[in-house]
Image (cartoon, rainbow, N blue to C red):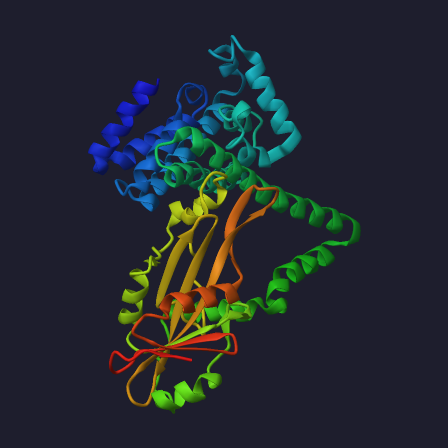
Length: 423
């Protein structure tokens, strides 16, 4: 079976035009009753995810094909169950192993229509739930909604782990398990909310239940979510223009730096300290830092984000997510890995001084790994910005820059000549 899988993956890589059709066929076969028992579709989709990670295939295209195949496969199983009812019980493998069908029926009776969603991820009843749903006369409209909704979750759940961990299918399984747990937790929360509202509706009336739902939906906006969405919207539609500042380089260097923002204005308002200011050409500062081991952070993609679910991924492989300041994403992010910690420097444009010198605001800090939900996933969080400022100061002391450390902030200035000033 492993040799067959390797041959399929090699063919997909050699024929990317047909890759979508192959992925669709695999997802379809894995979802059809009886056939799905024999097809190692999940394992192959892990491998396809590995090909996406190396750039051989496109994630969104493969995800769309996988969703289409999964929806069609479950749809065919539902139609067979609805059309033939009990007749298929006499066919293999149900004739030899009737407990397979009985488990699916019992599972459906316990969980109702949500079984179609849960069954998509639950191996023991995976290949029989759509068939059973048809046998037991589930409404086609309800089945279609559950079928499409679960497929939209299922496809990325089995492509992303392979993307995150390359061709290591054994390690990808650990990520897949965590991803499925999170997805099922989300689905369980929605199911619990729906059941609670139904109970409230029966006891207190539908009007109160609908009112409670509206309150829950509006709660994020009442807590400031509206401003958060507004900031994100303005950032995505295009960065605001940076104008000319009402001070020249000398005025900024003497005292004007105090008039610039001291904290980053993020999605939720004030965030970490803006502990760096630089007057000069950014390319020069970037070149000086790269010579000291700093690297430009790559834009995080889907594969990098899924490493949050990898228990073995080092901190250096966790994504550096973009941050907003004043409805603008960073112009530059630099990182330097230091074992179990890493340094991160973010820089935003602040405008131009009146003598034409570009001015930049920055935030430099250490990052450490932080676990959540009993180590189910982890991500990088900011730590010890004071130490990061001190370290950056020490390594730039001999650089052709003017430096100041004042009020917890590091000021950098590109000199006209090669003179170095240290205060």
